[in-house]
Every structure is written in C-alpha cells, then in structure tokens.
Length: 116
Image (tube, rainbow, N blue to C red; front, side, top):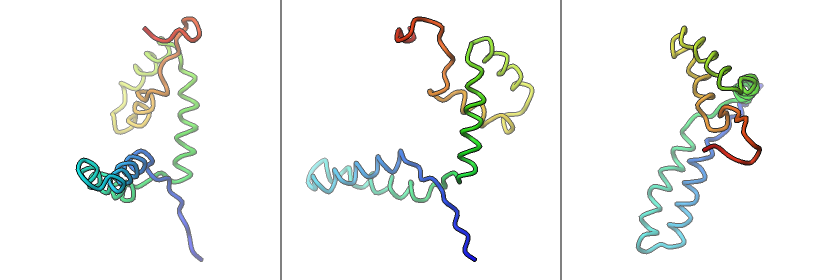
C-alpha cells in the first residue's frame, strides 16, 4: 500500500520565481539575465519549502472562520487580552491569522468608504 500526502506548494515564491526566470530567458542580455538567478533561487525555495497538508489547511480555514466572528474592535481587544495569558508558542498561529490583512477588524463606517 502506498500512502500519498498531498501538500500545497507555496504559491508566492513559485509565481515570483517563474516570472523572474521567464523574464530572464526572454531578455537574456543585460538586466534580464540578472533576474534569472533570483528566479531560479525562488523556484528552488518554493519546491523545498514544506506546504500544508489538506488536514492542516482545513483546520486553518476553520480557525479563520471562527476568528472572523470577532469583528468589532472591542471583541478583538477582549480576544487579545485572553491570549496575553498564554505563551506565544500556544497562541502564535491565532495571532498570525489575526494580524493578516484578510482579517482586519470590521469597520462600521459607510460601505465602500474604506479606512482613513
């Protein structure tokens, strides 16, 4: 029996590496050639960086959905105050999710007005 573990590649270094490598190949003289080496290095880094398994990805997505319920600034402060009682090793992943741009606190201003 063969067990296959599916991992998600790191897309940002993979896309950046592909763009730099292709531009280095297309413009093989001058500045284009200088972009090829960092592109190849990013491609190697994308391959060697371990990705999340499907179970880890699903768990993280569920955690993100649960944390999205804490949308007002008061709720976020209460949540962060509770996290201050625990070491960063325990709450590090949650703090990382809360700090990501996709989970900014809900703004009660007019829709489409943006943050000032």
